[in-house]
Length: 298
Image 1 (cartoon, helix red, strand yellow):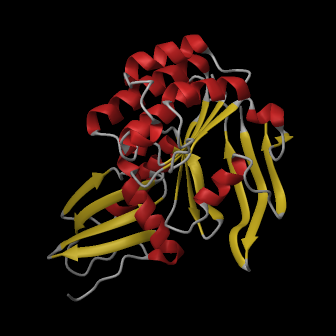
Image 2 (image 1 turned 135 degrees about the vertical axis):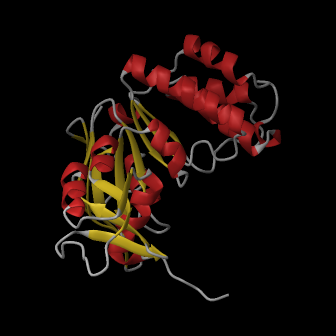
């Protein structure tokens, strides 16, 4: 299933949470949606889940509008940051509820995923820890055999071993079935391990959207020492620059090979080219959009 937002707008009491958002999630992608607090990520996800209706623009799944589209909802599963359950329900009760609502609920998959999570189906959901509730949410959602899986801070509350087990099993299942996954998280190191596409949102708009490989190929960190009196080419697109003694560290946007050649033209006494992590790309791209790191005297 592919997802596309075209000029998506949503306002709350005069505040524009989504401001002409353009977004595309390709079929079968694991798409990481990132951005600072208040960027509009959760608002977009609630549109995708059919909770909100946009003020303007379009939100499409396989070319069809998402809002009040029962056929679409039957093909997707959503795990919010705060898991919902009925107060008096056990995990077994919630499974029966899901089975009564979703035609695609698959008992065989339910039994399969139960072997990973090993939760007591007879315990009340409200008596499970936050991490165990997240495991239960994964168990139920994956039992729906979804074509689209939407995750908002999905592994928050899980211990490190279970986090790894969940991602490993989920990615294997996604690869086998061609499921499309959209995941929003502040854990960028973790997203870097699991995502193949990334969208960076800021102030309700898409700041940058590319495959992760392309994103990393178009940003580079260079540490160098220039000879006295030498300067770098003035038209280099420098996102960040800092000095530690004579060593200068610069973050550049552009093709790595081309940038390296242009910096070498300044005859540096020392130069080291380093790849950027997704977290560094996020920080320095936002720095160019008015979110530069601030220095404080404490």
